[in-house]
Amino acid sequence: MTENAYTRRDDNGNSNSGDDGRGVGRMTGTVLVTSGTGKTGRRVVERLTGLGVPVRSGSRTGEVPFDWQDDTGWEAALRGTEAAYVAHYPDLAVPGAAEAMAAFGRRAAACGVRRVVLLSGRGEPQAAVAEEALRGAAGPAEVTVVRSAFFAQNFSEGALLDGVIGGELVFPAGTTAEPFVDLDDLADVVVAALTGDGHAGAVYELTGPRSLTFEQAAGELGRAAGRPVRYVPVTGPAYASLLEEFGVFGAEAAFLAELFATLLDGHNAATTDDVKRVLGREPKDFADFAREAARDGAWHG
Image 1 (tube, rainbow, N blue to C red):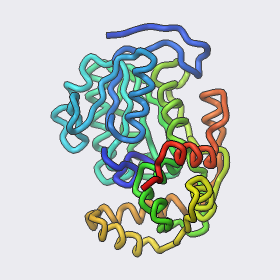
Image 2: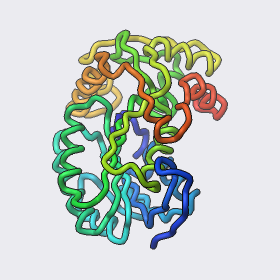
Image 3: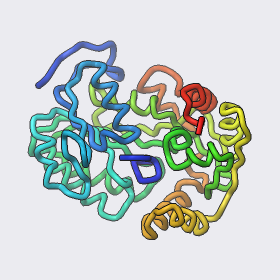
């Protein structure tokens, strides 16, 4: 699941040697992080900064202007960079995303960007079209695609936060299981692909170590938060109406409801070992995420 309105609450070269081709290897020069204030972008920025990698955090209102709806600032943001993390807003599956990826790829190639890591959605056919558009336009740049399962942090930082605090998770997932991925694992994989060798052309599908239904996830969240959390299943159209009540425009609400219906039909239920393949360790379990989020005060509400 990419950096859509649902998964966000808001919105030159150094060198270093590493330990292996799949971990943090040779450092890049300056990295542009698009959607740099989003849930994945800010984690990537923090990690790159900690490694001493020069970073440009791009956002609509930040020091480095970058807006997916206005391409006039893209070239300035890309000029002089060696790599880019691409997190398209509102989602890589929305109409126009493939065209945006092609335009971004052409500018990145013209600016000499050598490496691109793209955040994509796992099991999203339209997102795959946008992936190919970026690959086709990026010229000689190395492109790595990171396809993510449903973010665990949607329950602690995203639109489901209020549901956890209020004790009711209303969502159109039925009894489908999802291998929720922790965003710390995702960010670590992104940084490994940005800064290390051996990832060119790779497609990583990132999941947690086990799949849970939303009812089971609600139970884990309740135990961690110390109060009951109940899952309330609804239909897609009912959820779209609920989103509209909370201020989401009709077209976006309908898109999100349709997206969740596509993602949560069971085809994404299986786990993968790609986090371990890249990082050499197991991904974080959902129960550990919930305990850490509770410890950090996510649900004090």
